[in-house]
Picture 1: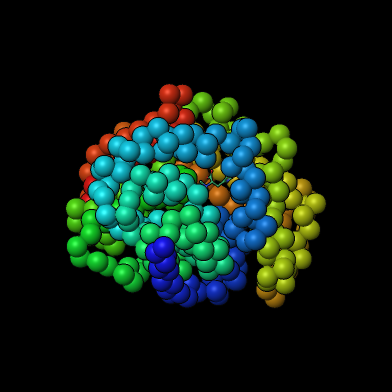
Picture 2 (picture 1 turned 90 degrees about the vertical axis):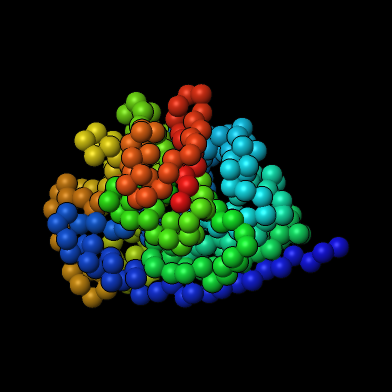
Amino acid sequence: MSEPTIHFYDLHPPLTDLKAEVLTGLSGQPKTIPPKFFYDEYGSQLFAQITELPEYYLTRTEIAILQEHGEEMVSLLGNECLLVELGSGSSQKIRLLLDALQPAVYMPIDISKKHLWQSVQMLAIDYPDLEIHAVCTDYSGQFHLPYHPDNKPKAAFFPGSSIGNFDPPHAQELLQQVAQLLGSDSTLLIGVDLKKDPQRLNAAYNDATGVTAAFNLNLLTRINRELNANFELSRFEHQAFYNEKPGRMEMHLVSNTPHEVKVGGQTFEFVTGENIHTENSYKYTVAQFQNLANAAGLQPEQVWIDPAELFSVHCLRV
Ligand code: AVJ
């Protein structure tokens, strides 16, 4: 029996971000709160529920693509590679690649120390020969790989259309950053949600059972708890719609009365109908995303889509 090796690098992602960013966001016009703050304990649970909703096609479609084309993906990533996962969360999808890619060194990167720790413990049980280097940091910030073997091809996995949360200039910047992090002749496997019938998109973010609404409103519960704020959830309503021109889903929390809220010692006024913009989720055609990749200096090598053309997985070469 071989022992799984787990190395844990805590790069201490700053904890002060929430207060500074929420106060800045609420001081703007329109008011905003960054979507990365959705994922506290309960928010992560709600997101897990979202991925199971009949309307939310993204997760199951991406998994189906990975199942269908995993072998081909792995052949492009290269065997015995260092596989970096950006925002690894529960590390479920990576299993589909790890099953085909043996042996490998796996480097999950996640901002949540607790989730990262739990998921690598579980993974180590199921993949006893896997060498794991877990990195706790914010992948959207600047950092270096704490473990950088020169003799292994490097690949990154960025699933879930998380790239959609960044507007195109920032998405391009992030791709450039990943390219730099990996070095030349590495590969990036990235899941990107496709443009489609707006009705289908709107349904995915306005599910019948209200899980997405609860996910959106949970931002306020989190801010109440962590920043000593006094948001009343009944004064806000979930709103999600496809904005055709920028090509993105938008989520907002809309105030239904004029009122004031105290956050971190500051007072913010809301008028009726005023909204807090909480998320953008950009959608791309295959060509649009390939153009973005090219602009970031990455070469599109392959792309897989499901038969209903809902979701895409791109292989890009650095
Ligand atoms: C995790 C950012 C890809 O945009 O679809 C799900 C988050 N927001 N429902 C997405 C989300 C509302 C999700 N991403």
